[in-house]
Image 1 (cartoon, rainbow, N blue to C red):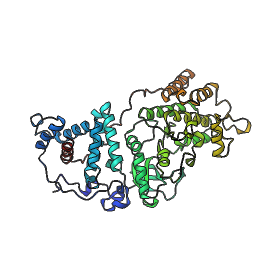
Image 2 (image 1 turned 135 degrees about the vertical axis):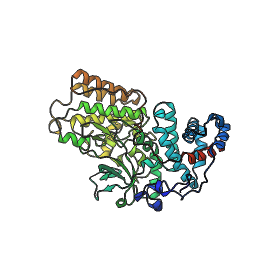
Image 3 (image 1 turned 120 degrees about the vertical axis):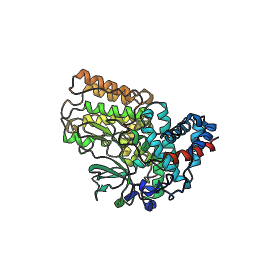
Image 4 (image 1 turned 45 degrees about the vertical axis):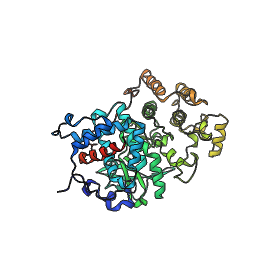
Length: 469
């Protein structure tokens, strides 16, 4: 019978994620050093010692008959650490050594379950635990096992591509999925990308919103030189630009509302999209718009992973706010709003912003002259007559394309304006959603890892807690 304290091979995925294939899989970022020999521990004396540092329940407060005592100790310690910046820094620093990767994997899995527990799905405590989760992942490059996928069949040829990734169709548990293979070949570059994109991956994995494309998990494809892949549901309708070309009579304003809902959600989570354009908006089977690729191109390029500099390499120049051409200016909520205006320009004209300019240099020059995209005329019009009305053009021009970023409206303000316009316009089937409060985490059903050894994790955490005295 296997001792409870020892992580066994049956606890980890097989196939592309086996512990025997560490160097060539996603485990290159989650490398395990082999089974950890841990004797069965006596928990309650350790709990008593931890009370000295953190004020947890004493031995008399904790029932020795409670089956959840170890889990509660884990929750208490992690919550205390998450609530203090100083404790988080020391705690993560103590766990960053390579020889502690097995322990970090267990703690990462414990954080995953804790964040999906009903009592921590809302509130300030959840936000602090999320911060601890992504900071731990950033320093150790270890993610919860729930995100590490296996047994995905990937097509031999991509069906699409962008500035930093090739997109393949795949199959996961009988469902079609989209496998985005990053154009990052060197292992050190992959590690650099993971470090730069950890916050977005972590928060994306906990998102639950009907206008955000879900992240199913991470995968390493054999046929793609074992590069890191991001796996999400496959949207058969494709991106928004192609969808409108194939369905030109589609009502545009409900799609705009969907986009503003998703962008408001991201901004409430303090996530900057950074590459908002029709190509990065997908259409679901039910005709809803979903945002994807938020933060991705910015992290790839600014982490020097892609082998080029600036946003122009990713083909985003036409959607960039003027201030982004200034040195040391990073994408912001305000630059997202400028890009949203450019996205609406695409939706309502069928043309790219600054379509009359053929080169990125000409676009940059126009932006530096404080020009805005010009409405197409004559043969340049790509949409049915009357699609763009005065109200929408005013929204784009006066609320999104202000030269002073501080004068641009917030995503929430624009969402409210679009929702009001839909209601007053009398369009059928339109309803508004209140996202002004903090976003909730997804339901825990199907998300929890059920094989965690909380007694072992509590032992690790208590030892760490004692080192923080």
